[in-house]
Length: 504
Image (cartoon, rainbow, N blue to C red; front, side):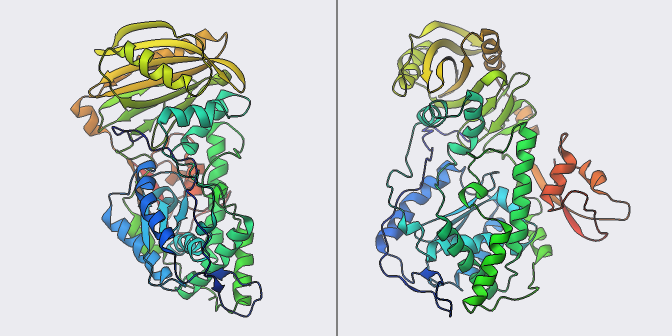
């Protein structure tokens, strides 16, 4: 969770774009070869230029590691030089987000998250993703989106309530489970299947001309499918069709990549066999890269969320699973209960006045509510606080919103608990979570460190289980190790090969 003073960076879709009329055949003998544009319109370029800062804000900004940024930019420019728009301009950005995703905006803006980079196992896999996104730009796919309701600046609570509580599935817990991906990261509605396959074919063209093995992307997609399955297993839920990640925004499969390679050959592309993967160079560049949450966004450790820069910490109740995102922290609990933590700029007046005059009315603008009740002031670990309750109407009926606000400096930190009716005991456990909120000492803040990627050579006697025990994870350690290193179930290690570990 990255909090700033405005806290208004929720994305709900991709801003729409005008058609580009100057299309030309991409070349090659195939009659169905994808069509590309060699020159962008000024309006598309201006649109990308204007939306780029909003993307940075919503996804936690760009990574601070200048070396990693330069490495991805070099790969991108190498591939862009093989495209129909070699002069660009092109902007390649590594977003400071643990979510596995990549996407493109008009104007040559290509984004990959560090979560995606961590999942890749060589340079060719990363190049495959970047090449695919370049294909969306040169294929004018981004420029064919007409829905101008796409990127929208929304208040944090408005996005939360509108996208989750009012539009979720059968239980509020499903909504809360989805919030980390839907708000601040759920920016895009997927391209059509035809456009995706065209981007595959164009990507294969650029990757092949750039000297990479285009089949590397098939390996990456298999790893991505495994990590999606593992995340669902860790969360104790089934596959979530409403998630927003690379697989949901790009419904690609390894088989489709292989079909794209065959199609590219029909287009006349010289697809190399056994081209370099550049794994060792890739590992050198990512060693030491932050994995998971960064200090800018705060850290989840078990049931506790701590922010070393904003200097606070709190713990969610037993049986609640906590999830961090760029804009907020959410926790899903039993029986449909959910807890949402975020922040807002503090106003003058008491904390109870903030709830009654600012927060509760903002909820009332989103849905029908009952009367605010049980408004009271108190202190939480020496900090001014207040709480209140009111009924809210959702598509699943009336539920209870339990609001606690705590003032720290110029920020009002907010805990919103959503409970089913007649589940007051469960609701009180969420109130208790708010009462664990406290300042961190300077020493405590310094001791909070992000997880990082370490590269290790496999030695004689090393096994998956043995190396997994050296990782930072207490749960699902072996499964996480396999997914991170692209190892299928039962696949062993080879002495001398390099593997990734997540360490503290």
